[in-house]
Length: 110
Image (cartoon, rainbow, N blue to C red; front, side, top):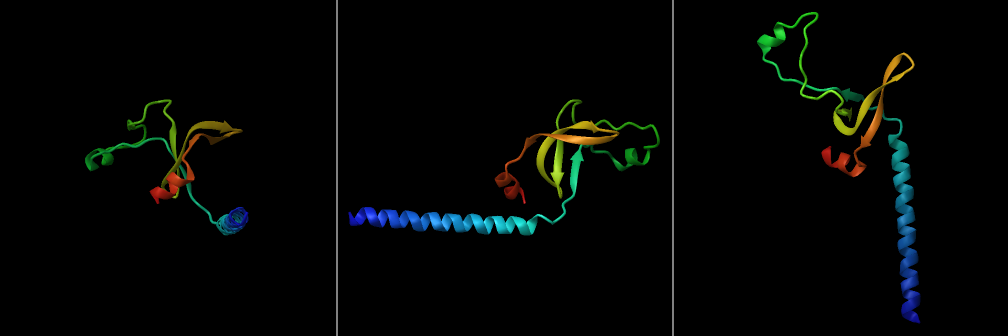
């Protein structure tokens, strides 16, 4: 019986610690909520020699490595966080998130 009571007490202590950790985590998130990040949507990229770059002018076309229809990379402060696609929002462009990186993977990339 004493062992059962001790197990119950240990479980209560662990639950209290877990609840406390959640509260601390929520407080930490509240501190971070007002920090601004730069969200960038990357359509694609290409490598050029400087000679080719200097020859670009109006009407020039640079081929990107990405295929038409491929998902776009969405970055927060330069760190990939998702993939998405371009949509129209009224008369503006927007991006629809189609795949979001897990927060754990995002933190590993930092």
